[in-house]
Amino acid sequence: MVKNSKNKKKIFSRVLTVICLGLFLYAGYGLFDILMDYYKNRQMMGDIQETFYQATSDNQEKSDNRKDSSKLVRTGFEPLLEMNQDIVGWITIDDTQIDYPILQSEDNIHYLDKNYEDNISRAGSIFLDYRNNISEPTRNTVVYGHRMKDGSMFQHLIKFLDKDFVENHPTFQFDTLYDSYEAEIFAVYNTLTDFNYIETNFENDQEYKELLDNIKNESRYDLEVQVDEDDHIITLSTCDYELDENNGRLVVQAKLTKI
Image (cartoon, rainbow, N blue to C red):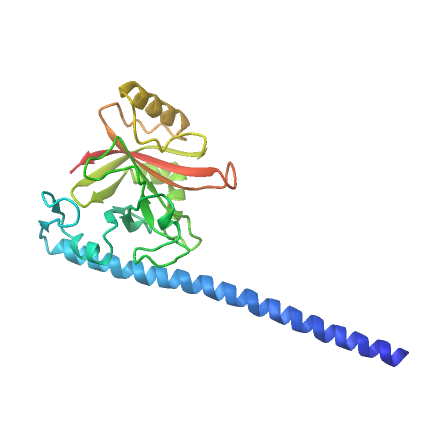
């Protein structure tokens, strides 16, 4: 009886060891897979950044045969459009990792888990709201992105939660296929999805003014940037967990000035 009991304990111990080893290997593979995805995303973004800035330095403009032949695509975007015709712009924020192409599809779902090569990716892409039109900009241009743990995509928007960072980085660069803008930050805040800060169409000036007033009330800081009904703004939106795990958002908004 004693011998049988010892044998059972040995068998149980071995089974438990095998299970633990299996779980360890599974967890290790999952972690390796995530790290490889981060690595590949960084490599891919490095490649497209090199392509964009090299083409920009060439200082040439050619006809846009993508949607509207009467418009000219700005320097830097033609080689990007050869990779993916959904590329509509570029965003750059100094002292962050945010230096990415902006894509747009027919919905706000496609690029949640697709990179600019249209392949599955945890990081997804930085993408423009499907309701926006870069040829005829609406009053509120809305751009979305994930917050990745390696600091990529829109993770570094959290830097704007530090007022000193905002004061030292009051503007960022926003480019579309056709125009270039300086974006002057006027609001930073955490909110929930029930606040419709992503509205893009307004029936009249008063409706737009009400949104601007609400945004200023939401902002963590009074940045003293004058924004009125005649101005166009850009909204950067990402997930946030301060107020709610599912419906929390971190928002940075800026006034656009064409340059």
